[in-house]
Image (cartoon, rainbow, N blue to C red; front, top):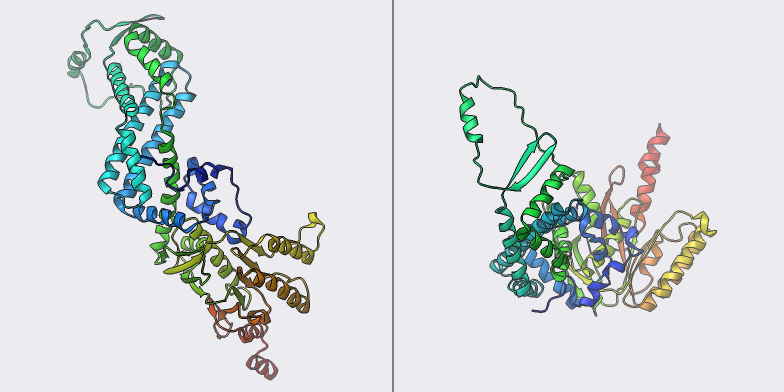
Length: 511
């Protein structure tokens, strides 16, 4: 049975993952925070590189979706978790075998590692066969696993390990201690008098007495006396210890590379499912998005910022969900409204949804149809960097020029509050030029701005407005709604903030 990777249909793609680095836009979209939360406690798997590689075709995303669906079944994820636990135990044994000093102790730890591995393989094969995975990915892995578990090499490994372990269990020896001399010899049937001694002195026992027993060390390290005793035992029983030595040398790389890869890769799914299960418990929804590779009529219902949701979950606070959609020739969502009203969070949500979908994960929301992009570009406001000797406007233009030079018709571009350092007239002029280039590309874009005129620039633009409640302080609702920008909510918010509404002015003048 042929099987290479539980993450990639193409084995070549799996081979280059570890050479990848974090994409530039991760920090702007808070994807780095999401990944940190997902992989927390799984440092030994080095999962982060898997999140840096977005898939490029709908079939590959579907491959992962079906595996995710299988792993949402309790009987399958329980089998995977049990296997992962055993594989971690095996790695502990093998790590000890390399770090310990004394020869035969190292060999025994290695033998124990082989035993754990063989048990893990047998248990996983049985558990998965009982669970009967439906996804092509897990079904193919099960086929490979069964063929491997029944193969000649694995059966020989398991049988030889069991034979050597049984032989070691039969070894008996005696130690004679006289002064500083320690003699080790074969067991000659000496009588064990310990039980008789205990019975003899039992009648002299008066209540509870202080124990003079010595606690054994927690450390696995042996001292030189113990090691020498073990060396002497090995010399007395070469028929047992010589095969152990041969076995350890011959089986140094006994772990199958495909199964070792599976053990690591499957945690990409398990870690995310565990992460979102905590959010589902708060009432939030996740869905498998429809992946679009031709149409750009995207949509999301009740989507939310996953990084913010995790933060608010810890604070036991509620997150606000938002919808968006594009129809026909619409390509650019222009988001306006008051400061601190959720505009930046909305833009991050848009980028996060598309990226999470492109790595094959369920995305926040009840329903979604998302475009399978080639690249994501972000331009978020940054503090002026004195090292590059460019002013803020110059730096904005430099970064935007770089983005537009690399973007294609399949790219996603997210612009957040650019040109804020210049005049309104210049900002409008420059924004129109930038949006014109984006429209020429026919790329998808979210453009967060304080310039409302941009929201009706062409048929490709859609206006979305961060809503405020018209109460005494113009409270933010953090809802971003698809409607024309009118400026009134923003103006009213500012007027109330500075006590300049008609009622507030009348009250102040009257007083």
